[in-house]
Length: 186
Image 1: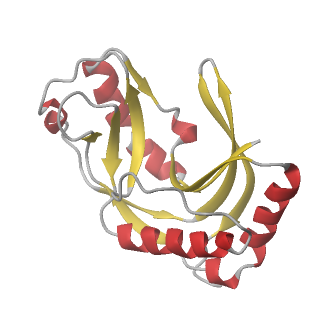
Image 2: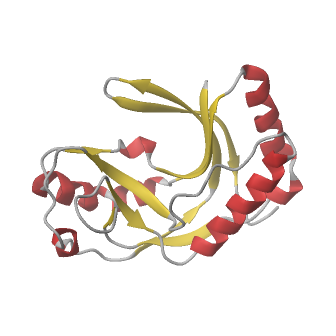
């Protein structure tokens, strides 16, 4: 099973992202948008694991006092691309306030899973973000993402999830194997 840990987005954030997807679809043919139900903030990608390893991760999620914390308040901030110059491979929305809390939660999680023998993956980009689309063929003129007009949208991340990722010809399909609520009363 292909497994990753993430913070999932609440329905209100998914609704707030609808104009982002409309802008991308109407302006750039050839982008492959992420399915809205698949939007998340990845904390760690494990790759292939067996059922026993998955159960160990689920147990850790439910018993580690270090992972107990309140929801993380954050905000959506427009559109950006990676790489930052030239044709994008990925289009994303960065997150503003709360980014340091997300990074700290990720560091805590990585420390906790190291006790199970997992090593952190190499960081490619330290900017906390939500991937919205991948690009193989679309032509995205320089600076055109700046034309997207948005209102910063504040929301709380309140679910820590262990996902299974199944690759299909239509893209990845994610199934939540375990969800742990981040609660103000822990």
